[in-house]
Image (cartoon, rainbow, N blue to C red):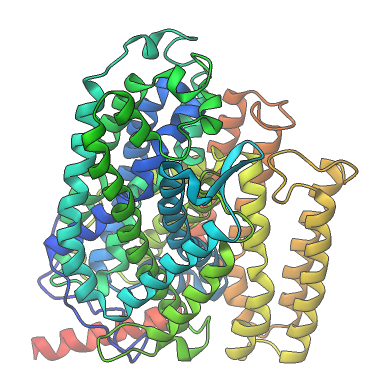
Length: 620
């Protein structure tokens, strides 16, 4: 797959053309792999095995292989992007370069929300395990069929953990990477030892009795990829690209770190854990009827499943080591995710999508203002969804929104910036790009209606921010007109969300609210009205950015409402095969629309011009 295209070095997107502030390159290959593994061995290894089992039973083992295949295909695009233009916060920088401000903002806003939420999720996992081990602390409780953090005890402990993540990040990426390297060694040893010990207590009946290997059906294998938290295990693929601007020799380090830390390691560890956990389930000790896979979510094991499995297997001595790692692993991941969230905020500021003050660095090279903002918003995220099991599916889906745009960006850069060196040049770029795009769409789709409608509704609230800030700041529309549009749309959107009756409703519509037909009509009309109004009040340049990115709205609105009528959705009128064929055809159309929509943005033109001048000087 790898083929050098030139001896010349591509420009770094952090410098000159995109922002005048440069981060320090202090992270080596070993530290990059460590950061990736630290993300993959976080709260997921402690709780995702149980959540995946509740979604698909023993067949959840296959869900990990499905996810590894999907992220291997998706990761191909990130390899070319990350080595062609290594930069920090690349996942929000590349769309800006290829498709302009509107697509970049929608993409970046969804990803920013996910990145801010991820440290919260890791803190929730730590508190959940503590509460499961010592219930007398009153940190967790069972409510609405799941485990939640209590107020004030559980949530305040979560606040304290988030504050610790903030302090550690202030000391810079070098400290984070170096310290995390030693933490990662510990985090690798304990999960491997855990699944080996659980396998000594293997009950093979758990794999074949109680409805067979796939008691929820084969479609549940796919649903567990997003809904079961499995997506988090492979997020190291993109994390590596996020730290590209701070990596030493990124053209060599990024692909190795992506393959080793992002795909191979998590696949081996998580498959082992899933097999070990399923085989070690003691239904009596868990307090549920044998074969009640869905009931595990409210069982005695729900707060600390692996700890309980190890203890039930007779390894009480090891439970203390596992509990130590149950605190250390999510905490270390939360530390890294908070740093990543601040870099995404920094990058969006460099794009002109957020205030420039967010680019301020301290003397250690950390974006400290962005860290303060991200941490502050994170505190608020504990309140509406204080449960790892509920929050994880929403955040995983929001993150997948960001994966969709990578493949179209690669082809846009091929067309508009062919002269830039590509240390890794994708063969059959249309095939891999289209495949990655379609698989990203399926991963979002498998999350299901209840998750997707919540995520999309919140993400759409980024539109009025784009109109009132980014469009005005760039001189594309007037502040008064944009402000009125933003206020009107926000008010209408809140009304629509409320009348729809699906927001944070536990997957069931609140009675007395709109029918799905009325809800869909209002949803689409509001989105179209916003775009039309923004087009009318924008100048030519603003309209160009809007035109290049408008494809993102029908893409995500369609896939969300298709999931409603899917056989597994509330409407359940379209068979799984039919809905899959519809999604493949639709996704292919959206992919080619996205590729054609890209244009030579000012930022990309500056980068190519800088490269051309550097090459001319070198030849002279």
